[in-house]
Image (cartoon, rainbow, N blue to C red; front, side):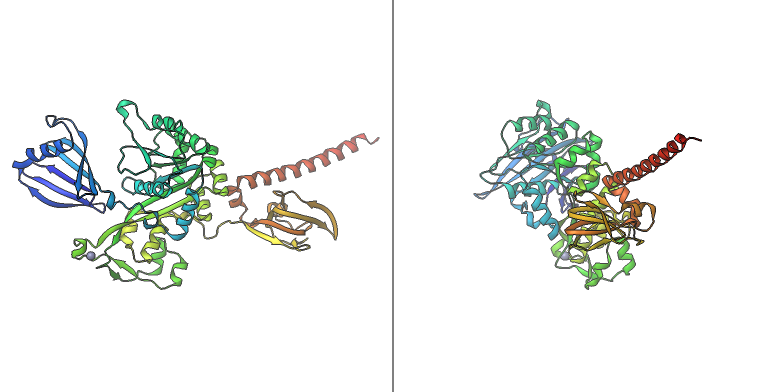
Length: 502
Ligand SMILES: [Zn+2]
């Protein structure tokens, strides 16, 4: 249970509670105890009992036994029929801050660990309200909390108190805003900083500056998925190149209700095409699986669900993703690249949980949207290839149109059996003329010693140009150079002819 709602209506005083994100009705209390109950709660939470016309916030701590205490955050709101009171239960013992138990897929978890172990950078967690962002951040902080690390947090408000972490409540009324807290933090020699939420340019700017000057900075944003988060920060006013170098990862998440393990039941398998349309893929059908749905029993109060599990989409800012961010590619393009770089989109994360029997299809349809329809059946993904001394990479007169970028080593250009040039500079391109013109190869390219090259598919030139701005700019330069060369020859011929005496 996470909240208790005490709501006055004309004829009743209703009590409801929230569990696993859903609201349940608990009881009706007699109206006669309304004032006494309100006053009691307000005294306990040190609120002004004479003030009934404006909202108030307070806190109650109740000791349970010697070592356990439960905190309640109390909020009052004057409504038509009296004050409505909501108690948010902040029970630390029910708070699961074990990163390994939040529901991460294995690969996503490995990536997450790699990102949080870096000494600096901005880590962003995104999702709508109630998607579990705070718990994820607390879990990350908890896993990084040690004696040799100084951690500072600015929260609105502090929900759970952790030993060894310096937590600060944001209070706008006294000027203690997120940016003000952040500025002060930087003078406190921290290693890790958490700022509750990035809402404005000022907070974003300081957070990014901190992330670029040796601090690990954690924060949240209200966005729907990882690529959209980058767009939001650009909209706020942060230059894309700065995001590309400061942001380490973006984690987008949702909470899905878990099927009750005592009563979940197998549902008839929908047709394969239907499942594919929902986000399942061909590989999923290699192994047999069953799909479960909710039934309802005493243990789950008849709802069929008990507990919740996180669905995670993690976009690591790899070199390729950073390049795309700097080049300001559109959001769906960024999503494609992130997927190629290993990101599991939210819907896919949900599908995996359905296959594991943890949740139902309805639940993931409610929590996630499908984004993969923007993905083409094939993906441009340049492969790295290795060649031994003398191997042919391109053969003269062949009609293939792939082109290459030298990664390591050197290659020779051979025309009609004679070596005419060498390419030794890593990063240089070769073979691109055939990709542009569609004409047969004018020369062979062979490996000189061992070489590593990146292969770009010539038949997907348009996509390559869209996705790799640096390749596109090189291709255009090549075309312009050739045109210039041709032009120079023509001009020279014309001049020579003009000089000839008639
Ligand atoms: Zn059940």
